[in-house]
Length: 227
Image (tube, rainbow, N blue to C red; front, side, top):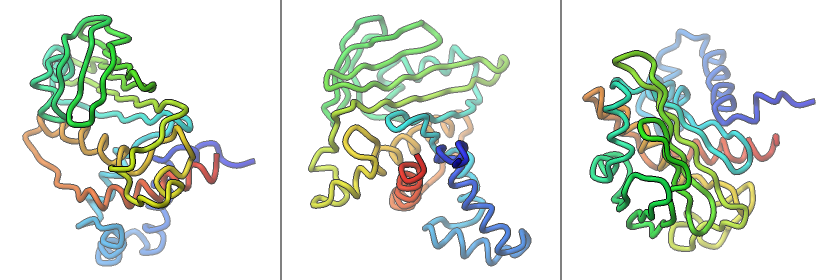
């Protein structure tokens, strides 16, 4: 029986990291740096941070990201429910934060209705084309809040031709088949959730999009091979 933990993309990359540490005996900084650069990361520290923040594939169609925000829950909520503040870490949007309200996200042309809403806690955007993206908050204390993003792909969703990385090879773009995530969307959500976290830390991570896509390509293939 396969190890169920390996169905998590996070666990897969953690296993990869263990290989690196064992290969370089945990104390060869130059070797670890070379290993990180082989995945287009500038340093081992950067790769470790990616490992910690990597998406968790809850099932074949659902990806989950968790970030600790250095903000109270009221402040964090503003960056989910206020379209102008949402744009600072995601992309331009038009919506009124209330149950059943219409939403539009640009330039993706993603639109639909707010299907779940609890002020100060959670909001779910249900796309007309199927699928949804769900933001939720949980207070840790009066200065920190846990943010969770879950993204569910509609069973019949096919990545659009204009955003494919491999225009003539759908299998490479959606290794799990129709209705599953591709490298670019996971890398995009990863960048967005990191940016949200950075807003409250007054720091800025400059991940290479290609580096993120490269690792998520490995993780997606591993997930569907083991699932």
